[in-house]
Figure: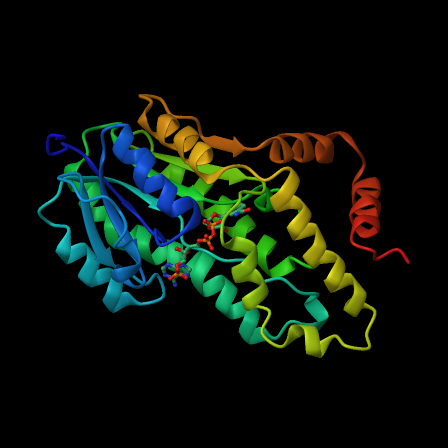
Length: 282
Ligand SMILES: NC(=O)c1ccc[n+]([C@@H]2O[C@H](COP(=O)([O-])OP(=O)(O)OC[C@H]3O[C@@H](n4cnc5c(N)ncnc54)[C@H](OP(=O)(O)O)[C@@H]3O)[C@@H](O)[C@H]2O)c1
């Protein structure tokens, strides 16, 4: 039986994928975890323990986040992982302003909301250098690809918010940006759901076959080079636990190779290759 932990971290979006794996990984490195999800029932399968506290939290709602903070007052919260998010895909000319707003509301405004509500608690509890705020960004917060403009815009914003916050909170609280490539989670199936009627909207346009191509890329990524969420979470948890954590954590060979490649080649060539891969040069 584990002892009650002396430091706790809040994680958003723990129902599936990376968030779920992060709960396990952070517990393994000795932290207590406040696992949060829009529906607390989705956390029922997590093994109970002195080091786990489960609560509802919807990043879109002030009331929900406010209540979550109130429920955590008895814990020594010194960290937060902003993990909740989804990918809105689709060519920009067929994307509605509402779809773009929804993407920003969850991935950017939601992340800012949760950070600002929990920050006073972290500042109150953490010793100098002990506090941790982790934003799960993406390699697509550093490079842009076609058909994912809404998502990449949201992740560029996350990177920028994280870098500004890091300078504002240093040296007491360390802000870490996680920049994964593809990870095998529910991400791609949720992205397909968030398409809504997009496939109908593009029928008869040049994007009809391109969207099908995008789907097959997602499947190929999951099969061939996606990272295991458990291993990704372990890497993140170990880095968070270091006395001097890195500013950025890249996850997966695709993130390392594509980010390096994008710096070495001219933008014109990068854009040509991206257009070609997505069938936009035909
Ligand atoms: N998988 C990848 O290839 C990849 C690559 C780079 C970055 N990322 C990032 O990694 C993070 C985790 O994604 P994942 O891959 O683990 O995908 P996932 O399996 O789809 O998990 C996403 C999580 O976010 C939660 N969420 C969505 N909207 C929310 C809201 N309004 N309030 C609270 N929770 C909400 C979902 O909860 P519900 O179950 O309630 O919907 C779910 O728990 C995301 O920020 C994503 O952008 C993923």
